[in-house]
Length: 273
Image (cartoon, rainbow, N blue to C red):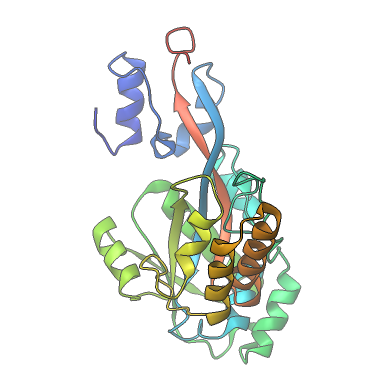
């Protein structure tokens, strides 16, 4: 039963027209607290991350200090506790912890530190946001996406004094804009194709069609080539960690926000195994 509407999906399930829902996007935000109390509501770990991309080719995000400042100004828990409410874990990295055969542990990333964020913005030449060009955040029209966008906008204003304009585009146009680097910041996510850090980290190599940030780093590319040639799982994870540190902290190409959880609706007395 195909549908893109959460309320329609819930009605299918409640009336017995559907036995199973396996899409985390099919949970109506306004009903999350109530649905979580139901015996047929189930959640579990999910190999996916929600994050923001910076377009490093367009000012002011061609400056790593500005990207770091915008990252440090975000309290991820405000989003997971106030908006998504499904038990998501605040993310400080792109790769979810525990990925791969040897349970990869990503580097700690940039935490929530408004004071340091303001200092970095000033060092970049924009004290209290003064002198910044118009800044836009791109997302697509869905209730939870709108709520997250508004919360990010609020935190950038609160902690940096920066007014960010929200730009909403339909799904296909949004994807085209991201691919063409026709944005400054944009909503992004990635779900692993297989259980390994490489399915996340290879995305940001210079030649990757999924990079979509304009960022190219020979050092990062070298890390990823070295990891591909490394047979020892421990050393391989260490190489991945060095690469991810460059991506999320040193160059701050993306702003990790939270790790997904999987959501399924089903009656355990009817479906098992």
